[in-house]
Image: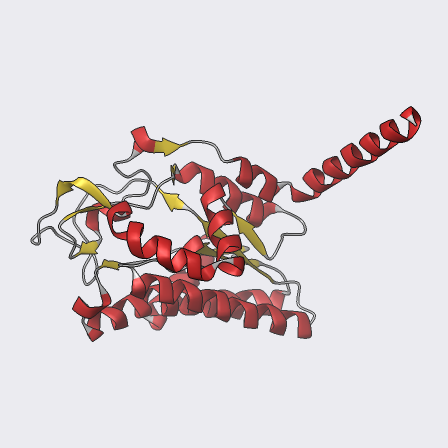
Amino acid sequence: MSDDQAVEAAAASFEERLGPIEVWINNAMVSVFSPIKEMDAAEFRRVTEVNYLGYVHGTLAALRRMLPRNRGRIIQVGSALAVRSIPLQSAYCATKHAIVGFTDSLRCELIHDRSNVKAVVVHMPAMNTPQFTWVKSRLPNLPQPVPPIYEPEVGARVILRAALASSPRREYWVGGSTVKAIVGQKFFPGLLDLYLGKAGYKAQQREEPDSPDRPNNVWHPVPTTLGAHGPFDTKSRTFSLEAQVSKHRGWFVLGCGLLGVALCARKFLRN
């Protein structure tokens, strides 16, 4: 994803073998768990190349094919950390913020051009994916996502909804922790600074010690068996009420409105 020519060649190959690309999902990422003072400039550059520029390269490849057809959907897999940064993942958080800024600009341009191509961001909570088994880390203990942790199927269902909905929303929020992070950052950013400064280090580490020689995928792929799930199945949630509301917000708002009308009518009749 860091090589724009490779992404373009992959897109061309996909269309040649499988037909027109209707949905393009950007989700590539690498990360480094480390205090900023211990980071190298090359590590920031690499995370930016894969995460942010990877999304840019993928989006450009999709637009080259979708705009002439005047249809298609580009889905950016975002994160609660795109709105509220946390300690020890500065490079990753910065790229997620950049992706949101890039996509906001894209939406405006698509509206200006009256294009039927849609750009959607799906903000994820902590997910039980394999990234925590090969992420680079300078922490004393093995890294983990900040609880609560959700199974990847929870996020995948929302992405599917964003891909298939006739009128997709500009953003979907998955998980209660994502809602709290985004809303909390809007109203209480200073309190979150204090809380994460005190709790954010421990929350991102397991009880088992890590090895500085453990393979990581920042510079090269890690030879391992790929899969959707990480090592946190016993700690992960398989359902998110907030995700269901996010997928069906129109029906939820309608239901709340009807409930409000019913309660008002009941009170009126009593009086």
